[in-house]
Length: 352
Image 1: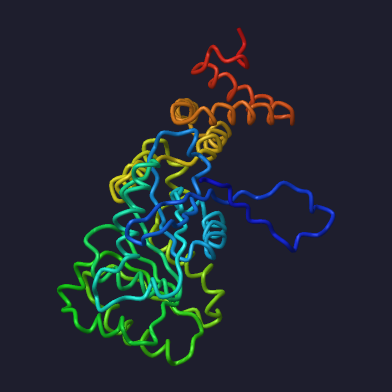
Image 2: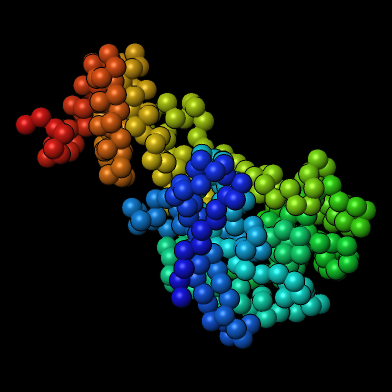
């Protein structure tokens, strides 16, 4: 049975205690054959999901019952630098996450044979998938990374439990040529004791200079084991999607350059990428107010492309037009209104 999971901030002051609940994710229950019992997933869909038909990359978040809210908050903080994600919080804890000498475990089969196919069938999920875990689920991520057959595109392990030496010994058993064939991985470490720092340093020394391995390793000495979740995920995502947001020069340099930027991203990551909803209307304003001799052509091209991408952009263009007309910039507002109405002539906002 599906239920809405409501994450309420208990510390809110009394005068807003009756405010609407914050809906972070939906809970979905799977009847798992691998685990031989029912297990819950938390599902967070992008804001644009219902208004689009495109596919979205997916983050599979272990310890979902604890780490879903921090992850969604982190994604929101740096949303301009990233694609929109489907986030799947996987309820998991304890011994089920413990590796067994490189062998497949019931939870591993649950993840790869049941959860991923379910998400692919139920939602518009792109083939780009990230597996992320913290603490003992971070150790699970690293073990899965060492034996993965292409289920996930990248792996994030934050302050992984390394004190038992299992992961460092597994890595030592691999040849350099074998490791360099593995998927990209990000590993971080908070301010932990020597029981964690020493194996972390061993792994870092072993991996970070392999020429063909895509790896990012970072220490957060100012963070505790618990507090490292936010900065670690932020670091990992910004590393994976470096260059996602176009530079200022690309944004204002013309529509063709902007389109090429997002075409390159689509090719690199394997799913369709287009400018975010609020970018094109803002660029329309930039070109309306520009003194460039080609400015009006750019205005027309940007408006046409914006409307093609999303009905939401049409509404935004009318709102921007109203704003300028009502605040003393009548000429700017009328240019946006007139050029928009050339595309959507039948819209009720357009003059007959």
